[in-house]
Image 1 (cartoon, rainbow, N blue to C red):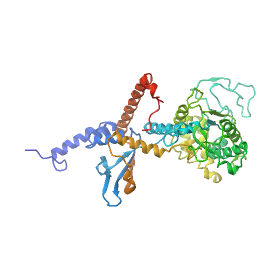
Image 2 (spheres, rainbow, N blue to C red):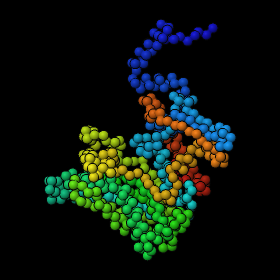
Image 3 (cartoon, rainbow, N blue to C red):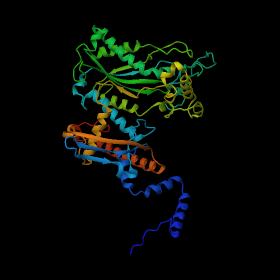
Image 4 (cartoon, one colour):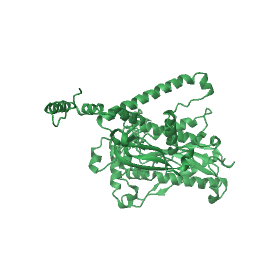
Length: 497
């Protein structure tokens, strides 16, 4: 005869055992207590499946709800999913944070998507015709101007006897290794133009737009066509990524391409050559000069790009200096980074006291404090400098592209989801009869993040997946030296699927 389960609320022996167990648990560190809780979860295996499906995301978003696909004519339910049967009645999905400092797993996936997004605009694929590789294309770097001399890698500024008005030396004379924390720090902080630096970062997206508009005007002038006519003859397609220099100033790496008027599927006119593109990129960038918003806090000034501008034709992998895959990988690398690469922080600032408590170098603290101070001025309210003080004033997207450049993140994610469903043997989400169906969905936000034990397990899953990828890549390297590689090339980048 099976003994009935005892109730600690009514049975003294069960209550004593329950209290003894709780007393032992209280003696354990919080992490170990959480591990015990997680191990006793009845649907632990399903929770682990969810975390594996998110790639070990460090900050998953939890949703509750359901979705039902109905036949539009009969009302029959063709597919139905509800989170009611999931652990805790909720579903974990990726946070999709691009920054490696916040979520390495989602950052890596975003970087892989960026690689394919940029690469498809260079060589075709993902809905872009392969003929795009024959169009004139440049890899361009646009930098910020000088706001004052800063320490630089290798041989720094030659030391001079003369001193600035604040008593600082006009030079350094040292040789700085790449890891030297002095790199990017001003030689004299009192001489450094901190307001100009912050305003340049804040208006960098506007400067980029002015450059693109100028580019059309300069192309029209060089080609001898009207400014209103040039856009009907040639299209400038581009994508750019923002990178922080050591001094904390944003600069842009961009791929710029000439297309025909219909986009990548049409060839540009014969006069739209690589030489013309190279010439007009230089002249258009040099012509950009925008006034700062009027304010009594600083003298009138105009913002422009720095004199250091690099523009290199792309070679399509024929042995030249820059190849398509190298450029795509280079751009993708910077989408996982932000202001923290310049020594700043990756979370928003909420008070001046917080700025004083930050564990950052004095130069970065001065930049953040300047953004905070300028952010209280009514005439600069539209720049939202206090909101973006932690990014040193930059409020633009990390990566942007013109509509016709290539595919989209949305399409890449949808393709990856379909590929994952196919590997799992599940039916496709999109079928021939989708035009004859309706979908009813209701989703609600149900939380975010992990408990300490969940974070530990998720980090282990992410590490295991990373190890598996490294093993796969090492086997690819072995295959690349065999006869198979002679018939099929490998680019070494993770698949978008």
